[in-house]
Image 1 (cartoon, helix red, strand yellow):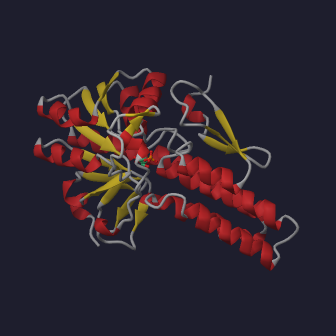
Image 2: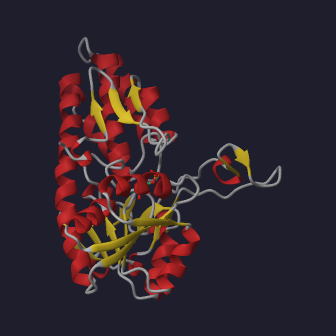
Length: 341
Ligand code: MRU
């Protein structure tokens, strides 16, 4: 029987993109069929498809949809201009994860060779992401074991960085699953990850699917758990990493890094090379997506705040390199102190 990670989170199927609707999990396993560029943009902005590598792959396949729609009779100037306009809209669907613009640009670069070439590039990117996942996880497992003498380990993670967020096992969560597979994990503490609960809904679902012992905690319990000695290592993913190793990731990551540093707990970022943006040195230059107030002032469609309450809802924060023990990619381990502009 194939493992869940053998099934990519999204695939090309007869001129459409097929993906799991992450908004419906864990209650319903609903497949989405995305037929147009607008479908793809809606799926990305509503987080039906989410996680930096996954939105990149969806964006690349969105360029394929556009190429077949506008250039299937050959690439006239007007058709190509329409695809370029679609590519720009796709790349702008979410601003923080650099993987999105990177993947859209890479697919678009093949437009001159026709839609089939764009499709070949996008599907090659899916295959590449799968092998990148495997290499990254192998390096990250070693990085954790080198830094954590305790056995077995109690790990803490934030948001969702597993197979839903990539084309294979994932980044930080892929590493946790590999460590668990090797019998080295007692328990994973999963931050629920307010406001959209990617930890509670998605990471807990993936850990349950893999049979790994875990508990979900509210985000504000993470520092207390570290203080009580319940955490040996924190593992997270990334949406954008600057030349000097500042890391944008799901809101709440920065606070975890501060708490981990205070308690002398290794804080490890696992992310592919495609999450690096070496055009930026300082994390303060990363554009942070600000999302709708509704996500904070209500829960499950029910308002939880007084009428008229406004919200501060950044989707990501930036953790400075100085708080990070190691950043791991498919090329190996970068110590934060070795990562310089
Ligand atoms: O808003 P989301 O759910 O797309 O945020 C995702 C994260 O912050 C992940 O940690 C990151 O994209 C890495 S996914 C391997």
